[in-house]
Length: 412
Image (cartoon, rainbow, N blue to C red; front, side):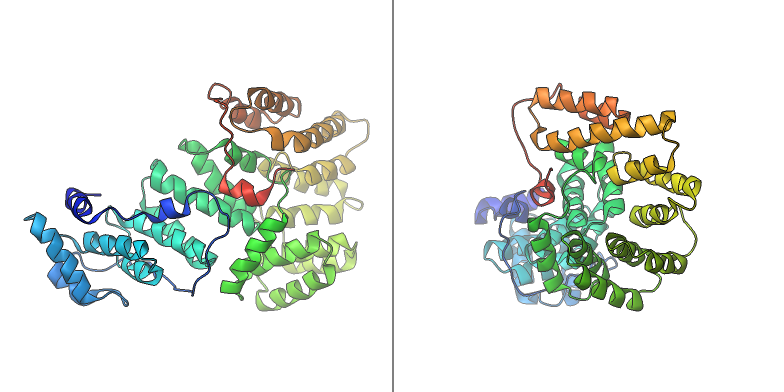
């Protein structure tokens, strides 16, 4: 907040920010009519009077000018369009007028200093409305234009992206965000769990599924959301429903490898190998950048007839997700039983099962549990994970914090 805004707030009272209204606890979020925010990046940056003629739809020009006059009354400096719109958005939110707030925020360009924060604020309103698609666009714009080490803006935006990607089962994209959070120092212990144990945590919790359904209500044709819905259905045994949905998605998105991967998973659960082979053929040759699930399904098909090729694919999955229990067991099935690597896989499988059970007890401030996790990681050869969790030992304070993502993701 600049000095002009500070003076205005001292006169008119500070409006609660969207962040403080939402906080970090998901709880029951309010549903409202959908408003799509367009991220505007190219509006002119002249004086307020010049820009009043290009206000976003839904922003009253008379009110805009009235607030601009308030700025002029306390400063000789001409207020920027963004400063006026930000003030209008704050006051609209204070009155519960979220549509109006979104309209104001859409007029704040990404490139200006307050732009990333405006995108974050818009995203939080949209998440409140369960509009995950529009929220994601704003969050990506925020992280693109904000300073990477800005914990308040970039860090919070990254946390929301992690939440969205967790609900939508987009683990590869989530990993990229989590790595950034760890690199710049705004990751929590819960974030470290998500980074290092994505497939030891329960991803098909009832809370996550309910939230996904809320997202789908707002964007009923979004492919990523529908893929996640089908994967939830597969996981809970609703195989006919999952197969029907994935067949439709495959027809509509024949080149989407995430659809292929989810369909393979559904067939795999029913041991339909001929159908799996047809999907693998349709998906084309192995690509190192393809979804991890697709690679693991390719490997499962090759275990009996081409174990060496299957082993290569399982190792690729483990290189990206070292604690993946299915890939570890798959690799074990391809190895000579008496080999050293097979012995390592067996030992790792035992430790991974122990980690899965103990993860829920590992919270910030619980020094003993964190130390036990570090020791188990080293025993399983998960040295990167061990080093990451070891960093929480000197900072243990007894505070037990659970992230918004963990609230829907589950621990064990």
